[in-house]
Length: 234
Image (cartoon, rainbow, N blue to C red; front, top):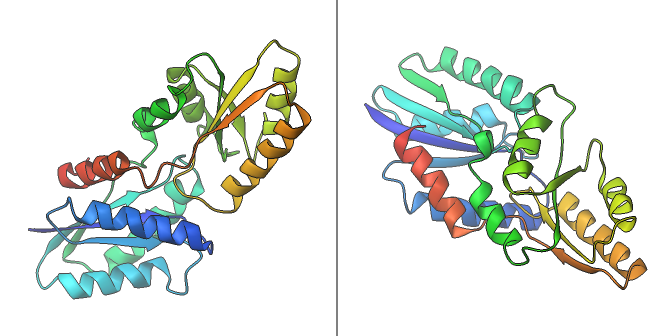
């Protein structure tokens, strides 16, 4: 049975986000022995189900197994509802195809090595892992577990504690160095806003050393990990 893979990201209209995702997919495809499609859930003129359907028509002259990897860092509504709904629509259309939704990329802190490498540049700094965050039950505890493994505290863009709140707390301590690592795959509106916020904070606190990590989606080791997931099917 032929194997196909679909890597699904949220999507963005940001040029940097799109270019970085394209770079990641080029790296992944070079390490996988079967066809792989990179697709947007949102922010695309082509709906996700339409893109996948065309991919299947191009590659499925016979029964096939299609694994769909959600390139999401939290188990939010896209992972729990939107993707299963899209898969159900595709299953009704392609009866001969076996669809499997793999675990989302951020599950079980398996991305910790990429983040630890950034934090390790200064082992004595106050570590903050900043993520988008979710109000969905069960989502943010995954981030808390990851942060604990990294010996870091957490801040969120969409929920509390916010980055402002976390920085205000650190101002009341003896911290002299803050190392902030964004839990984001690609550059875009939010990572740029985080960078701007940290620049403003640094200007207001000249005695503090501020170090800012980068989204890790173009890290070659991240591409290798994704390729391994697609090769193993888990």
